[in-house]
Image (cartoon, rainbow, N blue to C red; front, side, top):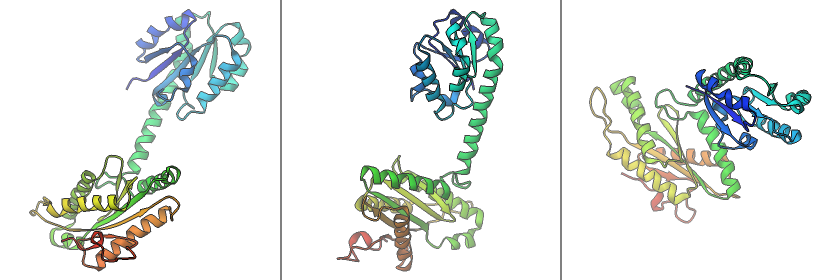
Length: 319
C-alpha cells in the first residue's frame, strides 16, 4: 500500500520540484502551508514514510514543533528532513538534537535531493510496514481463534479502561457473564467439532444483541463476557433478556442436525463511588451466574440481590 511523504511549507523551489520524483517512486504526496500540521491529531502518522520541512525563519519554534512531533505515537521511525538556507545549516546540530534526521541546503537540485532522501524514505516505509505487521500480530493475539471475538486478555484490557472511564465521567458500568447450559452434553452427543460450531454461533448471537460500543468476549470454553458501557441495572437486565430470547428462539445448525440450547446469564452493575472496581463488577456477575446455575439454569440473575425482595421479577426464572 502506498505511503505518504508530507511536505510542509514548501517555500523553497526544490521542495516543489522534488514532488514529481517522489510520485514516480510510488509515494503519495501531501503538501501543507504550515508546520502545525505536524501536531494535527488527524495526521495519519502511521502511514508516513517521511517528512520534508521547508525552513522559514523562527528556528526555536521550528525545533519545538519537531520535538513535539517526535513525541507522537508512531513517529520514531519517520525520517524528518529539513531543507533550508544558511541559517538552518548553521543550526544543523540543534535541529538534529530536536529530532531531524537530515538538514539539507535548499540550493540542491531536486534530482540530488531525491538521491539523498531516498534511503531515508525506504527506511521509513520499511518501519511503517513492520509497525503494521506488529499491530496485526498484536490484534490477532487479542482475538479468540474459534469465534473471532476478543479473548480474555482483550476483555481484561477493555474492562480496566472502561472502569477508569466510568470513574472519571461518573457513569454506571455493567457486566454480563453467560455460558451455555449443559454444554458437555452437546459435545458428548455430537462431538467436539459440532460443539465448536455451537460456540461460534452462540458468539455471533451475542454480538448481534450487543450495542456497537459494548464488548462481547469469549473467556474460554462456552463462557462469554459482555461489558455494557454507561448501562445501569435495568438496562443491563434488558440487554440480557434480549440475548436470552435470541438464544431461546434460535436453532443451531450442525452437520448432525439442528440443535437447541439454553443459556444462563449473570448480571452485575457498578456506579462511581460505590465499589467501582473491575474485581467487584466481574465477581458479582460470576456470583449471579453461579446462582443461576444452582437455581435451575436457563435464567437471568442479578447480583447483589434486591435486599427488599430477593425474588424480584428481574431475578426470576425465565422459561
